Length: 481
Ligand code: NAD
Picture 1 (tube, rainbow, N blue to C red):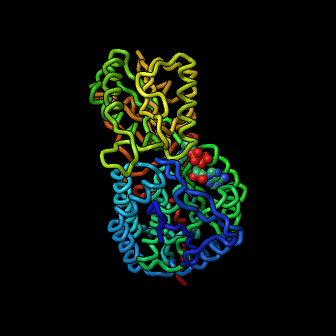
Picture 2: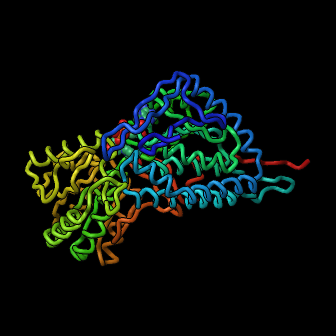
Picture 3: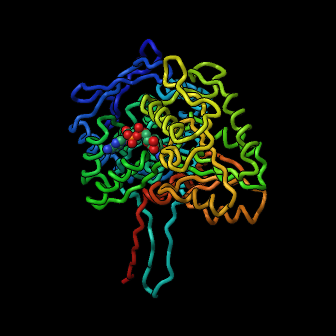
């Protein structure tokens, strides 16, 4: 069933059934390109959450006892369905999140590949046999940790939930996931692929609700064995504290404020084009988005000119419209934040080189913005912008640039541009970040781990490390009698 906007009716998925919440309470879903309400998302009651937990407990027992060959066949089928439905999933994503169709369908396609990668990797989650005393067999096994509670935001409406779901389920766990109430239909379309592929009831449960109520109940439940969260640093710290009280492990993928250091020997035009492409991807609403541009003083004017050119060449509009290269911000909070950070920087002496304001039309559109002369005490230099804002700051000494880059409590992504192997090594060694890209600002890949240091969180998603959080290591020593 769809509405006039072509937006599907949203349901939760509990114990293999699609359902409304027990109270009938809903929240509106808004298209950020038009500010129109396009649908309603059901909100779970405590009883709905308890049913989801009970289902996950049962689902875990069933899934754990399912052979790895059968699990893989179901998950391969789910990946095929995601790929087949990528265009439809992408359209719903653009309606509720705003990103361009090219970005949303690309995200859906990558999601299918990520699932395949984790499924294949789980087949090789080997333990080991350790040489021991005669008559003793000493082994290490890796077992699924149990039912997982996961919480994901709105910026990657299919890729975000799938990172948690695909790792947890490939590892043999069950999961209750609360996806964002702002992008619920995309999450439901993803879960539908798993359900249609034959995943047993209860292995994957999708809920929506009042975030703090949902997380408090799911974290405290004795059914839940592990917590996985992606979102802001303040919410991550809150959930990590709740998780600590009940002594459960957690995976925290939090925010960042990625520095880009453009060294004196770099090609300023190439660096600006590559950095701008990453900066404005998803309208800057990416935790690894480059967001502080520290450019050697000898290059700063050339770099800025090319960056401004790239920003001004973007076509900002409804993501559904062909030719759009940057959509709106996903919600009004992001728009207000972009306005506030720009006004604060300007009031402290920054110069707007392009953009700097909301577009004069309905929708949460903010112009791709480049700022120079941004003082260190501008909020934009310490607060994650999560929007299309690019502050450019000159430096003369690389050690000073490294000190600025490392001065924040964040440590997620960092970028560097240089043609010197020695300088590249200095950046690799010196930047405090979990993800470093040199001479490009490429995004995450499923083959390699992503995650932060410092306040940006702990644990890794992607790569063989992705399964670690969902597996426990058990030592078994067997004395042969
Ligand atoms: P927010 O901190 O209010 O929420 C972030 C996410 O956490 C949302 O999906 C929200 O539903 C969820 N959330 C909030 N309180 C929760 C709780 N008590 N329990 C469980 N989940 C809870 O921020 P926002 O306005 O949605 O986004 C703005 C900020 O969030 C950004 O500035 C950015 O720092 C951060 N963010 C980070 C990522 C990321 O990929 N790391 C993604 C989206 C947002």
